[in-house]
Image (cartoon, rainbow, N blue to C red; front, side, top):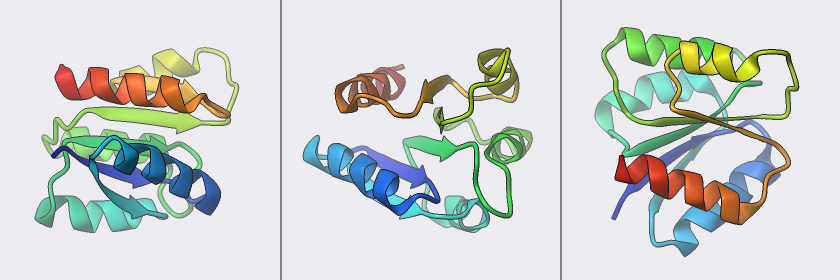
Length: 119
């Protein structure tokens, strides 16, 4: 059973993602702060990380860069409501594997998660 960690500060979005993943029989850990992921990832490795860009305390982009600098190669799907020019290039340049804009279709989310887990 794949383990997915969701780092999202919006409780509704976090619960919706968790529900989709659990409905697909994946184990889910939800976090609302990037600092929690930094502490937890060492003790509880995940097969996939979903990280929001707009996190409190630790920006999602900085979190991805920090994970990659530590040698963590867990696939990362970044989710965001931000619409900035060249955002995909910026996010992928930081080490993320994919980017999904909010609001998103749950089926699209699950398909992207499956593809990242299969890679």
